Image (cartoon, rainbow, N blue to C red; front, side, top):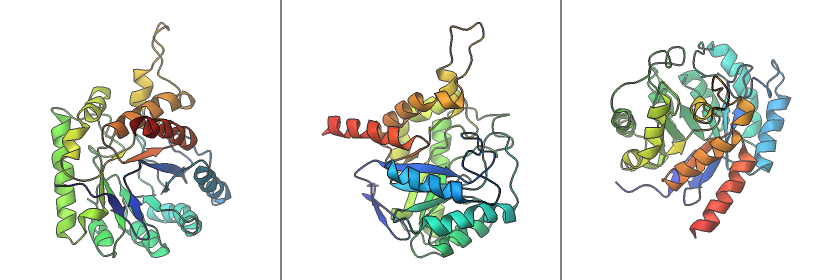
Length: 290
């Protein structure tokens, strides 16, 4: 199956000939990556300012999330997620770029699509009751289907076993085919292998090493390596008596390295925290690849 040269979303056809940088916007007080640095109760001004900052740094897409899905995270009530996300989306859709919303709740999907959001980015790959209907009922919103083993609360207590690449590939193939049967065009679908979602360091690396296995399904890939704990453990300071994983603030360089490797191996979208630095690195990669 030939891969689409663009990603069809609500308002934009995203050109995938150029690697796309998706900037992460956390409207949460408990994100694993920034600890709520851009969130203050119901005051969304800091989150909105962060959206504009990421665009100034070169983000092509903004991905807004109101619920932390770090390992061990407890599910957020629907009304709280809506209170966090809707004011941000209402502003962000006026910024002139594709707006993605990171949610698995069909009620949130419907609400943000009604506001004009372009993409639904779902860690559950639309497995929640009503999620497929929310996406399929929209004329042309984009969707990213991610693989996750178990759920955030328990996913790292008993990671996957066996050949994870084949399992992830099979899961994503079924999810994408099921969505097409519901009426969603192939051009609207992007896949994400779910780095860190119920997988060991070695398993995450195998997904990068064999990324072509998933690309063979014929859908564009989104890579989400930014600040993941696997990178922190790979780069642990071994000079200490007990190797210490990198702190969150020290993970930018390995995150960019992983993003570049993913793009070099065929990923078309990278979801990142450090937008300016990733954009600069990709400019070098693109220039050297011409």
